[in-house]
Length: 238
Image 1: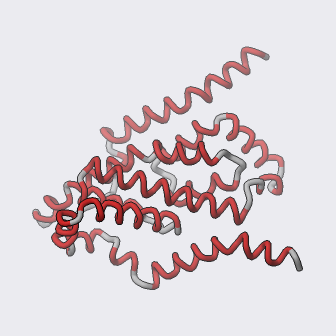
Image 2: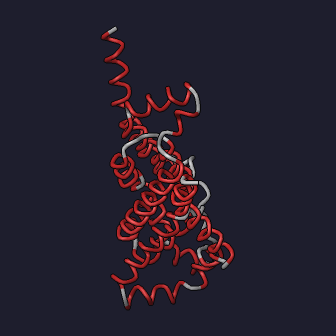
Image 3: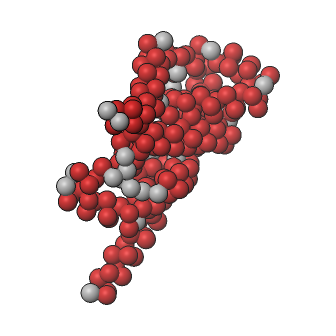
């Protein structure tokens, strides 16, 4: 009987997030955070920023943190809003801060509910994987943030299943999402001109263009250097 309240306390934050996520979809949240909504309300949104720049920026950061914290898919659309509202670099700043806060929230909730030692119950293979992860923790986490093929909300939760340092998770998130944030904010910055021309704003292939992908690949290679160095050092010692 004594374990029941303890289990309820562990899973309560996860339940709150699940309810908030369900409410977001039930209340039509995706309809408000869409390219069509941005196109229809661009003048109203621009007016908010002009009249209350700081308040709007803080509100944007809070909203971004909330949606990432409850694991709403498609946060890149909100990044477009950030670029449209505040420009490339201020928008990217808001995206990075909001996304990092939200990612840290869901990480802590998942770790609290599921536990950081789940790999002990998953067999020797997962324990071996965790050992390799912990040897190069910051590099691996940074690569996960840089590689655009993994959904953001998935990368937020998976590291919580392993006994990694929260500090490394937070730092890799903060710096690892900067390139993507700048890309999406720059797209949002040009949204008005695209809408005025009667064209549709598209995110398809945005992260795979050579001028964007090559610098990201360069950062990934830099992140791999510590891993390669450690493996080379071990080989030399054998």
